[in-house]
Length: 351
Image 1 (tube, rainbow, N blue to C red):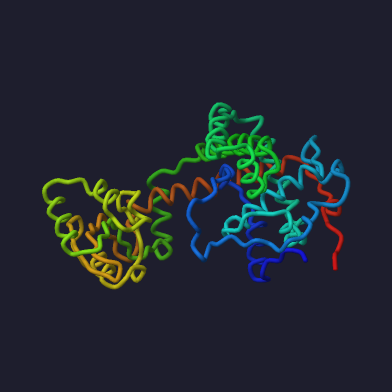
Image 2 (image 1 turned 120 degrees about the vertical axis):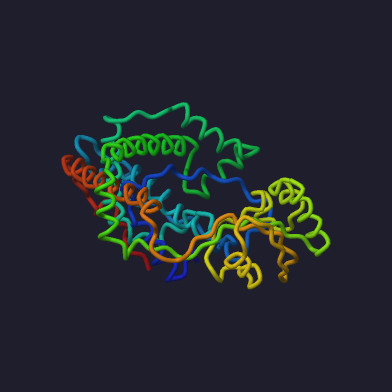
């Protein structure tokens, strides 16, 4: 019996696999150390039924799947990239990757070839126009390796994230660092003045809206007496983050000094929600919930509506420069002759 993903999840993951990335390249995630506490039920790893691993591919690994410029790419190159891409979207669902899952993405292989060759075209452009900080790449790799006590544990984590060998991870870290440097240099070419930004803002006000949001930090304790003591300590100048780290019963926010980040209305329990959206900003409040007593401070609150120009301007500049850079990148890619041979990557139908 071969491992199966539910049909709906399979469809969503395949769409994610083929989503493609243009100017939003990021370094590949390094393998994380195994958790020391159980994962939440919603993110519990799914272990496929015991079965022989599905073949990564069928065919000659040296067979050419495509050409970009004067460089050729083989089936082995494609399969290596396809495994990592599939693992990335499977991992995003909280599932450790296994080769058995590759069969679930088999139909996506010809379309992924287009993305693969485009990505390699960007790599070629980057190689002639940017430089990579190899020392930074080496440190990134060593930091990833340092999360594990043994080479065996590191290898297991690599396999769970789609990498066959440590060298594969190091090579991909270097390639992505090179691409990121190139893409950043493209973005920096395109600057937009205040008049252009203001014009865009006026034409697109209806799209530049925001939801109401509160940014809050809190300290959760079991009793009202403990909450009162903390309030007095804060009034006397005690450090909020230090108290949260030492005494808060919320394991999610305590290590961050009690910081919950920002959230919208209705996302927290009723009493906490009311304090977050109607209470004073910057002042200590105490509220009770089913979890205990919360000593909280609203650090920032924004109302729903049109985003002010001052706040929207950086995002507008980012969008305009991104669009211009994307057009430039597309033109550069178009100058490279590309051939693809999808029949080489298509797996034979299975029962």
